Image (cartoon, rainbow, N blue to C red; front, side, top):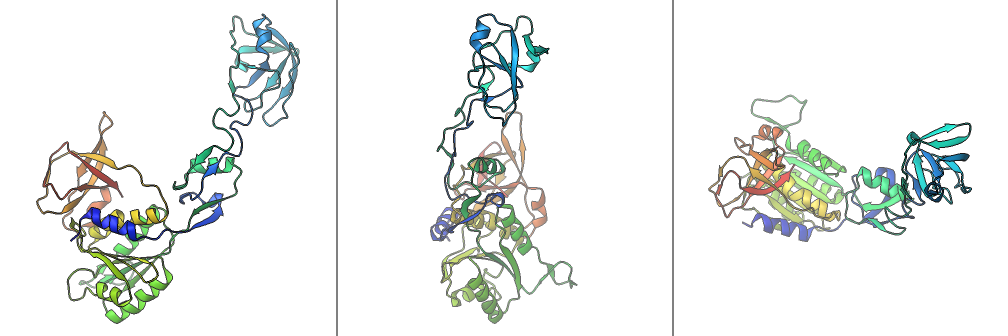
Length: 398
């Protein structure tokens, strides 16, 4: 068996990059940016007024002038006026600074009567006060966003501010999720005592959706080699990525590895030194389709999907890898097998801002109900068996 690190490296090395495509900015949120976003012009593009009030020349104020006749009014979006000596322009927040003005006095500090402005007693103004200088946020052609970032709502504001209507993003991969097993029955269908409800496929599709991958479809196939080969072959033709659940262990009905080999899918590895999810299989199809065959137990399926499939799709999309996150165990954990242990946890925090991980032990790898209250899992290394309270480990959020 290979280690979890070796498995991850092998997957990332095999994954082909998804080519970029141009999409309208208003539908790009959540997609991975594949271009640099450059500032269209200085920001702000002019000396911007920050307060409602009046615009004056500080030189006049500094000479002791405290009453100014109102020259005009300039609102945000109005053409920039030129201030006449000894006068004031009524100004609105967001307006461009009038030519010749270099001081804004807030409306709360003045009294206007019969077209004349008078300051409140003992008011002290400063030169360039309440003025947002041109280019102080960034200059024209500055790089505001880099390729490899998932586009957020804040990024949409930035992209629009640069005058772009379309943006280059990674193409969404076509993904097919296949549940295998004679015992599986979809929700809503009649069920016999010896059967179980299908849950893995819908859960995997939901997890993919949470991470920004929406071009997914689900299929259920019974454990018949000929039928498996025919239908999996069709999905291979239609999709960039196949995710299978079940049929990869050592049982007589675990046909998936042989079926995939017959379809020309080359195995990269089979089995990882971890719990849960040891029987996981990964290979590459004849047209560079990535094929993930996950163990059928629900906890194993979800952990393997989160730990291997999601990072692989992120890498193929060009998403920059984030810094690792750590959490601190709230209680001691003993795990003796020489395997990496993926321990589900519920997250807490203390007054010191520390992220705490409360272990949630599943009854078996089929106990998916226990995962509902968890926030992710800790990756406990195989080199150790005792993990005391207060020790830290890498955290993976679902």
